[in-house]
Structure formats: structure tokens, C-alpha cells
Image (cartoon, rainbow, N blue to C red; front, top):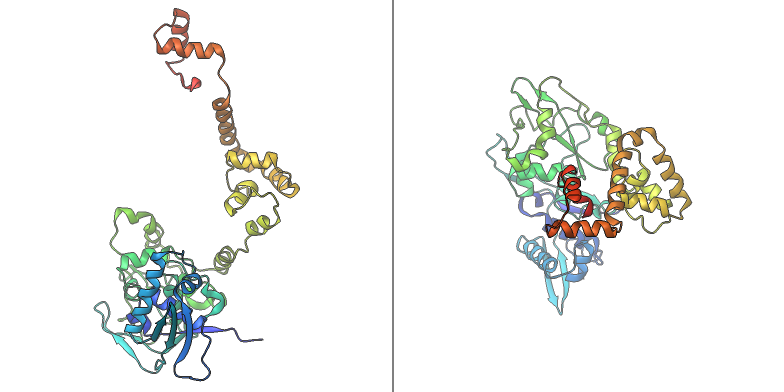
Length: 389
């Protein structure tokens, strides 16, 4: 089996670079064309628009500025050198001593945080790490993954690596799909949740046992920070709701991350769900998104009137058959059919043309010229003229 290609991130970058700088550094290796003649310092040639394209960022001055800022930052920190001629950058990727250890003293635990060596990031996953802080999240979780032990990462450590507050780090992690929390339960003695360890989204094979692994020996019980929730503010309530529930000391849950959960997440991430498969079989050009497929075929979801009209007018036999099965499902009918019927009736009422008598009624009402019959009729309706609108 052919070995998969990869880029290498010096782990000291987690101490002194931001996400953009790490990502640009990885892309420079990704596009490297010359390296065999000089093993110490590798070379590549590129242009700003090309880097923007490789990064999957939108074209424009903002993205160009971000790339230039990242290049200058990497040069200042001596990860690269470059020269620019007529918009073409000749970049030298400097050799980094992998044996050198870098430490940062922190006030939230007894031991310093240490960084050394390199972390390999496979080419095949880089395209999934181009959004938000995903590259840093994935690469740091990969760096701290161990075969026989688990390295626990508290939110203070994440805030150090991400360059933000611990509360913002919590939100970033909570909204990312490239890493997975591994819960270590609740400590009844301290009345706090145990610090989580983390897996990358593609590390399926070791999920079962990871929560049972002993803590990395350098992280003694005194040095592992008991997780304290970041300060809660009103805007963050939804983000913390699940964590609030997990703090209840009724049950000390272990193995909270299941194979099925990881598998479902990977399928969604790589487009391997049943909805993706159905979408590939649908030929109606009006159906373009997974959300439409869910509404048109899945019993668990309601159906909008727009998608119902697609189902009623489509010439796609496969879609018609799937839709009929959904509409005939008793569970779906009990939950959602009445709502769809109400929307349909309201739309028909809004689109119908007013009769001449109704138009005259509106005119008389506006000018106060109603006769007693019309006044009584309007009073009986509670002065509601919405049916005319």
C-alpha cells in the first residue's frame, strides 16, 4: 500500500503562530516543487492569488491581505524566507530543529506547557481544515494523540493555542466538526467535570478505548486542570446547554463517544449519508441541497409548500416514488400534514382574485358608506377584513 503524502507542522508553531500562519505554512509545503537538492531548506514558487485559491478563500483584497500578513509573520518568526519579483514569490521553507523543546509557563497549572517535534497532517484532510480555526484544532488534537495514554486538554490550554479567551475557545471547539471530545466523566470530590481529551474526526479506530486510557504520566493528577466552565453570558447559553447537563453528578459517564456517533459525523462530513446518496439519484434540477432531500423524502422532517409543489410537478420518477412513500407515512401525516394543508390553503386564498362584490365591500368600508347589512356582517366577523387582503 502506497504511503500517503503529508505536510509537517513544527509543534513550536502552536506557541507562536496563529491559524492563518500555520495554514499558509502547510499550503507552501503542499505546493513545494523543489526540495531534493537542499534537504535543510526547501523551496517553492507561488503567487498571492494562487495561495488564496489553494486556501479556498474568496478572491479579493481582504484575502490577499490575510495571505501577505501570514507570509510576513512566518518570515519574521524565521519559519520561511522569501523574495518577490513581479508578484512571484520564491519561498524558502527553513529547516527547524525537531529536537529543540519550547516551553511556556502558565498560571493555571504547576507544570509548563511543552512543545517539541513535528506533527504530520495528511494531504487528504487539508481541504477539510480551511474554515475558521479548524486547522489548528485538528493539528493540535493530532499532536496530542498518544497510543497508550490520553493527553487531556483543558480550555485554558486551548485558549493558549488558539490565541483567544477560554470562553471563545469553548465556542470554537463546540462549533467545529474536525475534532471530537472524549469525556472523562465527573469528579464528585471537586464537583467539576474531568478535563476532556480529544480525537481528530478521522481517528475512528481508537475511539472505544481512549476514555479508558491512563492519563499521560507528565500530567499528574495535580497538573491536570479540573474543567471549570467559562463565564456564562446570555448570548452563550445555547452553546453551554449540553455542558450544563453533563455537569449533573448523577452518573459518571465513560465511553461517551460511540462508534456510531463518530461514523455518523464522518459520513455527514464526507457526504456519505443516505441523503447524499438520494441527492445523487435525483435528476430534477430544482433539487440541489441536502435540506431539500430531507424535506422531500425523510419522515423526520416537515415539508415546505415550495418543495411539495416540486414533488407534485416533478418528472423524476425516483423522486416521485420517494415522495409518495413519505406522504403516505402515518407518523409524518400525524405530525406535519395539517401544517402543510394550512399553508396550501392560505396560499390559495392569498392568490385568488377578489370578486366584484368583495371589491365593492372594501371600498364602502374605506369610505364609511356601508349599509346596515354590511355593517352587521362585518361586526359578526369581528371587523376582520384579512380575507380581503
